[in-house]
Image (tube, rainbow, N blue to C red):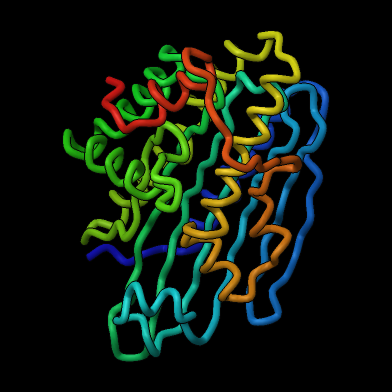
Length: 302
C-alpha cells in the first residue's frame, strides 16, 4: 500500500483554492475575494475567501480548512465505527457560487482528504468530494455539457466511475422531506481508499480541476440573458431548498459543526438572500414548472 502523503494533498488543496478564486474573479470582472484566516482552538484552521456583490456573482465562497484532533466526533464514528479511539486530520476545499442572474445556476464543489491514526495500527484514510449543479431555469445544453465534463474526467479511471458516482450524487443530493432533487446532480464520492494512494489522489485532483471546466462555460452562455422580478422571486424560493438540504441533510455541515469548526466558514454556503412561500403552486406550462418536470427528476443526460 502506498503511504498517504497528507502534506502533498494540502499543497494541492491550497493551489486549487487559489486557482478557483482567480478564475471566478476573472469571470465576474467586477469584484475580488476577501480572505479570512482563522484558527481552531482544538487544532488546525483555514482560510475562507468570499466574493460579494459582483457583476455576476451575488456571493461566492471558496473555503480551505485543515483541522485535527485527538478524538472523532459522534457523527463520524456512527458512520465509521472503526475510527473510535483514533486521532484525526481532515482537510479540504469547499465552494458554493450563488449568481445574481437566475438563469445562471448555483453550483457547489468540494474535495477533501481524511486520515485517522493510532499507535500500532495502520492509518485509516480516504478521499471524497464531487460537484453538483442547481439550476433555477433549465437548459438541456447546459445539463448535457455539465455531465459530459463529469464523464470525461472520469474516463481515465474506469468505465464504471461516472455512472457510479453520478448515481451517488443523485442519491445524496435528494431532499427527502420534499421528495425532490436539489438540482441536476453531477459527481459525488466518499470513502475512496484503494491500496494505491496516488491513484485515489489523481482522481480527486481531476474532480477539483474539472469543476470550472463544467461551470464557467455555462456562466458565459447565460450571463447576458435578461431577467426580472418573476425570475428573481423564483430563484429566491428555490434557494430555500438549498438551505433546507444543507441544514437538514448535509454530512459535511454536521461534521464541521460537531468538530468545532468556524461557523462562519461552515455556513458560507448559505445564499445571501432567500425566501419561503407557503403552499407554492407552479403554473402549468411555465418555465418554472419545466424545471420540476424536465430537469429535477433523475435522468441520464449523456
